[in-house]
Image (cartoon, rainbow, N blue to C red):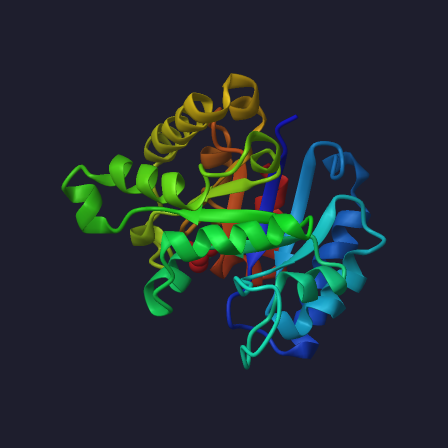
Length: 257
Ligand code: PGA
């Protein structure tokens, strides 16, 4: 069954105290709202900085449908890679998900699709759910090349997977021009790209898998526009940056799911 998800990518924000507080305030509010249906086809995922991941995992542990994941992972299993964090480490603290190929990783850390494919493989090998991010830059959209860009990212990063491991993957469409800019894709632009992505999944893995694949929208999604975006048939929730750092805003977005 296709899951609906709201995920908060905290990026390089918070310190231990504020990370704990944010996860607790949101988590406790969600735990008090069984009517939201979390755990029954709906999920909330926090992506805190690595250091705070065990703390956030603990806060989520007794809350149905609320999970914690990492913002990245290294592509190798283990070894002499000073400063890096492996999928096995992420798994060992009880996290369940990890972002792969966020545009900030692609841009600032030169992560390309071949590398991202290895990261996805590592995560799946440890039974973690990759949330694979894709999306075009503004000049690519202006040249009407956005569909080709996203297709190439998915082809190289994900579509080499066999059908069964692919079923575990979540896709996040994040147009780079909308990330952190306050400019959101219109609901029509989001729906158009999400339907295109689902069509690609269907061509590769068949309609049943495509219908079951969760495709999130990311890029200046906030409490004011989430409901309009999530109302589209192929938009299954959101990957939220800035607005996930404010408990009230993030809760409003979850209510829009
Ligand atoms: P934003 O970030 O909501 O602040 O635009 C989204 C993201 O980077 O995942």
